[in-house]
Amino acid sequence: MFYWNLLWLAGLILIFSTVAGRVERTWISGPMLFTGLGLLLGPLGLDLLELPIDGEMLRRLAELTLALVLFSDAANADLPVLRRSARLPLRLLSLGLPLSILLGWLLGLWFFPQLSLFEAAVLATLLAPTDAALGEAVVTDSRVPPRLREGLNVESGLNDGICVPIVLLCLALAGSADGADRPWHLALLLPVQEIGIGLLVGLVCTGASVALLQFAGNRQWLVPSWQQIPVVALALLCFSAAQWLEGSGFIAAFCGGLLFNALGEPHRGILLDAARTSGDTLSLITWLSFGAVILGLAPLHLEPWMLLYSLLGLTLIRMLPVFLVTGGMGLGIGDRLFVGWFGPRGMATIVFAVMVLERDLPGGGLIVASAGCTVLLSVIAHGISANPWVARLGN
Image (tube, rainbow, N blue to C red):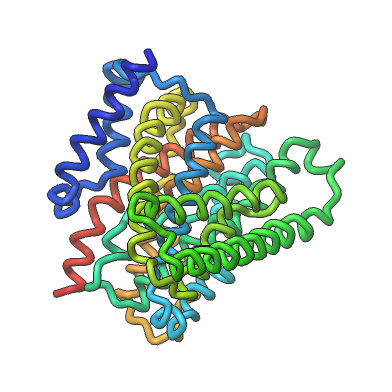
């Protein structure tokens, strides 16, 4: 069975790698295609692919994928543009994100009265982080105004790390009797610890690694056969060190990528190619596993209101707060709607959903199914709309 599964994975990735350039010029995206293949080949479809992936394995796969993608996205960011337009991601993270969580929590309580206060908070928080990779053209195409492009990239890079301590806190409180036996000082301590440790680890690991790379480069110790390895190892080092120290590995990876970018390592372009390629490959495997494993659980808990809540999560719950907080910034209505719409839900939501799956919460099945439904709709809707909207901006 191992070789049978490996045959399918290797074959699908090989075929996609040969036609990726053509696929990227259509409305079909890699995540959309591989999620669909997971559904088709998994237990809900032809049952040809039996991935021996439990919740723990899927979470680790998604975490490592997200760490690599965050590091490479940050390392490729246009820092001069980001410095000039830092107000946009700052407003999205400091005002837009809390408002989205609050609105999602209130609507979650209304749509799903069987959820407790803290279970509804878990649902709202795990659906809040965005994933720029689902609408890759939005953050890579030069036709998108740089201010919007870099703002969305930074927002998606940091909001998942910010949401980690909130999700952990809500999970801890949801697992007790309305949080009665949990100290409420965790509400302040946990976010500060996660963000602070993640930031420090990312900066220290990256600063030391860049110094080592420059030292080796000056002595011509970096040989072509090994130039594909350092950045991949650095991204995983930042992530794993922060997680081991009980910080946010996602913030460590993204901040490490930003510092790697800012320090201007001479071989940066060559070194980054492998990280991006590795992240993209792991991403395809994760989306295939998502379609086969997570979406396989969704029909067990599917409710009539779940689809409506998922649609609102991609529209009203995201777009209204963004529209409000971006007022007075000199952005047109079209630009504000563009920023609000391109908040796709992806890898971070999958990671958080699997964390819920590992807990024995009364409403856990409903939360995971809602997350799966929202991500599936996001993969389709944002994948289809990315290239046409970017082309419209270019025109």
